[in-house]
Length: 94
Image 1: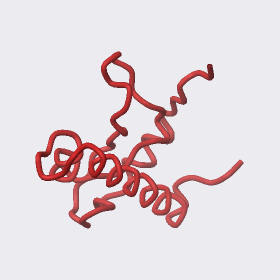
Image 2: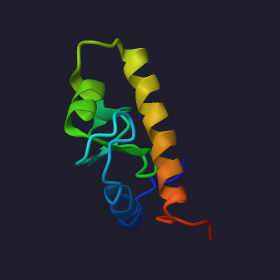
Image 3: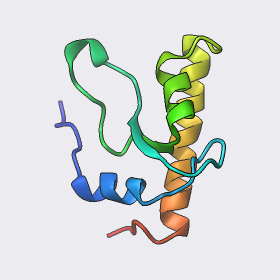
């Protein structure tokens, strides 16, 4: 099994996105995808999204969406985050 991907540079780049990729609100947090949490392990750092406090809370703990809907929304947020990272030259391929 491969080692979990950890990158301070990646997290710092996601943290530079100042607007929530879902709602556009200013002020973001770097949010990891929820998966495998029962073991105290986080997913790869590349599976993160730039979310405002409210969107982050709704995906992690909200009661407006079921588990599948929350995961689908987070997956969308991750894709939108990658788009922002590349559009703003915050990350580049090697």
